[in-house]
Image 1 (cartoon, rainbow, N blue to C red):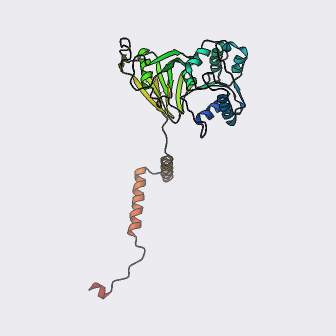
Image 2 (image 1 turned 60 degrees about the horizontal axis):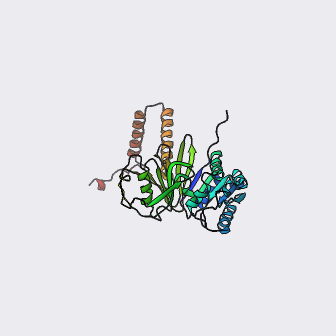
Length: 335
């Protein structure tokens, strides 16, 4: 019986990804989509801009080596039933959702054949990426809108349904730059079964299937913040209006580039130990010395103790032997 295809990676980008210099995140997206064979579809539905937003990403992805770049832009739920737009997604190896208004994006595509085609593409192995609004919609629950601030307060944000590519979670973007700690804490205070994921600008949380687990790893300049509220204590059920919320016992993870987190077990993945090159060379040299000592012992057919004694005697003999014979002392010397 053939095995099920591996789900494609998700790239959850916190917005303002570098488009001019290293372009680390966008390069990774094109490479994961197939590089020179990549067939990328840009979905600019969330954006208030016209063709210019498409032109920017088309130029970028083409410059980075993609074979084809197409656009699929449903502007209504009726558009999201269009077979031609769905066919574009079915042929894609990479899907990229731009930033903009995430409530518009979810209102147009979630629960439609177009939205289902994005999910199907992920299930068959295509890369699904999104920046800003295109990041938020990938979770099961999505920040629709709301104010920033460090303190969680009742009613400071609203939640809408997302595509559910990352289950039992809520994703927020521009996280540190716009101080969105409070509103993400508010959401998990009200729904402690959800994992809160905040992604900084020019940073991506890449979610990949590793065996039976989903693992999130971080690339880019910033960090990914995770709130695990599984054992939290909150007063969200009784707080009134815009009162500050009690949020105690939330487990906080701050993940910089290179860090990884197991979404299935909700645990940090240990980082591989880095070996210093100079230290590795020193250890290798010591190993060679030990090997030579072992060969010397075997060749002399003596125990290490006897070998050490013999070497010590040889050293003493060399030290005691004068290099030149001293002349006999004269009478004057004796006086």
